[in-house]
Length: 292
Ligand code: HEM
Image 1 (tube, rainbow, N blue to C red):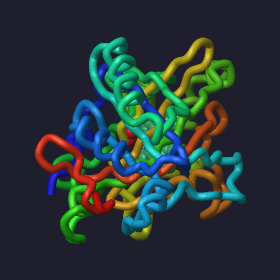
Image 2: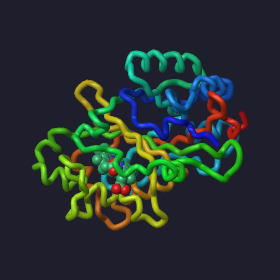
Image 3: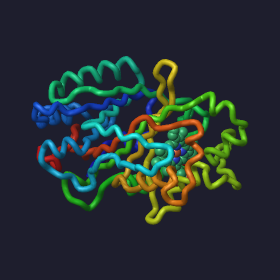
């Protein structure tokens, strides 16, 4: 059982998220096999959307599309793609060029639909200045939270990734007093301590992983992005299923108790997709659960 190792590593200095759609006129198997051989799970993480499994006429236990939440306030967009590749490194130019090579490798079966450049901000902070990732499970707890176990070869070692691009409204954030900003997150920006009197709408109250039944632990590897005048966070969470992320998202959007996450006062998602990240065998991704 070997998971794609980037799941357990701190976020890199730079990253590039690539999203691909299927070309319905080309069978995807050969392109997928080439891509799997080119991804090592460390510098290139591969995630497969449900459309790929459907095109191959297989089903992967637990793999589904990003949920429609018609009652969510605010609206949560669904932009499910067929494939997701997360390139990680230290040189943005190298990531761009590596992406070009992968794009060429899997054309014309897959077409690039979106690319997002990300970077680490200081000691892994969101662009609002708050440290992100503090409550991530570590060591064996991270494996338990993020990796499929006990389901057999091909599935064991795999992981389920939720990816959302969030756009920040910096003028709205900057218009708040510091106390109000801290109350949105539920943490003090200066010392990262949880606020004793955080309101129920505070982000860390909405998502407190041990407060769900069952507990909803995930391993988050979110990173800031910027493109021209727009910027925000690419939220990325790995789970042993999509259920923990989905429980958190539902609580953030008021499904449990009508209270929405105060984060929405300064940021909103633009995209959302679910991707199954196959295990690794040797130096390449193991696609045996997809029949390859
Ligand atoms: C722009 C969007 C977001 C920002 C800026 C953000 C930022 C933060 C920050 C600063 C923390 C506190 C430190 C930490 O434990 O990491 C946090 C915690 C957390 N966030 Fe987010 N987050 C965002 C979106 C989301 C989404 C969409 C989810 C899941 C649906 C989520 C799940 C969590 C979880 C599980 C925790 C830890 C809660 C705990 O157990 O204490 N976040 N986030």
